[in-house]
Length: 305
Image 1 (tube, rainbow, N blue to C red):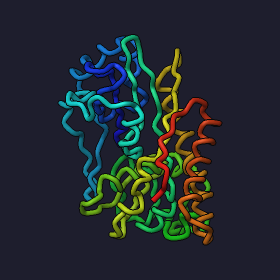
Image 2: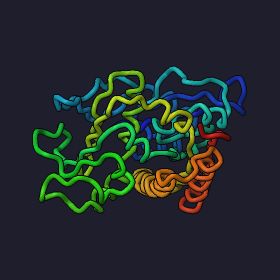
Image 3: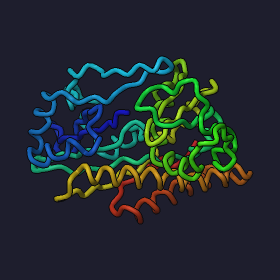
């Protein structure tokens, strides 16, 4: 799974505004941070000359693993946006698809981890498909063997209700611990498949998760909530950027899963799902993120559809 990044550099026409570029895998381990920290704005031209290192891609259901052509630069040459403020940029950004924002100035860079808020997250999974849990198979497509577990419906809100299919299945608590860290891969695939033929999503970690969509369109479920998110100032300093990334990636994903699980249980129990209540869930998430990580910048539209 690629970890996309946005790179914002001051616009030539107005230094208070930014031109914004995409990097397909530039968020992973905050790999662009050292380049911009050392070179400032001039690092953009250097990274637009370097080829990025693509991750493996698995094509379900055949299970073929291939590597995309690596002639794409680490930072794309054409901007996504020109002359926008950071607030304007965040209001247009899908927080599901991007993991990092680099705000580059002449003498350095501020690096942010982009954390989706995830309102209705578990409810969306329950409404739109079934999740199967397999042993990790080295990046391939799970074969004909039964999954450890199958998760559907209300089991997304209480994994102890998942259907166990094998006696050698690991404890369900361990399954949820892994899922809490890697679930974003499922939602990322949901966004990619909007308006297209839906295919199973495979996420590989210590376990393999196969999410099989049921054909219900997900656009309404994700809707404007794709643009709800929190930018966390990584404040990397003298620390290895890769270490900071791994720490943020694990803690931020786990915080999202556990926080929204409690709110989704609240919604599924028949409690109010009014815009006010949903907004309270978002604000609560922002505050918990601030307590956990410190300096954050939130993008929260006033109303959750």
